[in-house]
Length: 272
Image: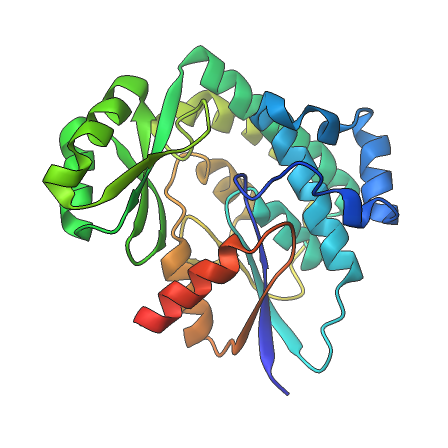
């Protein structure tokens, strides 16, 4: 029987109305009760509400998923998606995950307010030239999503310069992301510290299947420490997909709104 990996999307895959297919889901309704508010009503307000909403949709999709004849051998999530992946693997209780995601969203939104930043997708172009431009401008390569798709993160001023110079310096097409923070960069240090406090009081157990960490592109070791550090480290998604394939994964199943990760799988594995 084919082996599969479950993939869970991160912020950016959210969309108005994404909750409609799951409104009868017991997990989504339980999550809303735990939160004490409905994040789907406030998606336009950004990170603070987009993250809990997306998490609930992803876990509801997992709860309804029928693997068929596949053997699920691993899971991974893109940034926020790591929390849904850990729930799916049995390492983190759903109720605890809801509260962690809510705290993570609040921490990241607060850090973005304290030190505003931005993110810039660099599409196509020369990989080394993009990395060189980031280094020159003091930016972090926050996401290595797929061949020809890097995302830079940092101060608003540096992001603006990278956007201006992108085509000439790297050959890439620059697209500003609709976020107010410099996620997966050192500017998230206050958020990582606050999240670390919440993680310290949250119980985890060994996952039933390996869950691959964004920061290492390998199975989680110290889950608490890695989840906190991953707010500061790049999302190594391309490397994660290649590691999963090398571990014997034959099929990748995206659970949650949209099909962003499915597209990244095709781009990455076709180029491998």
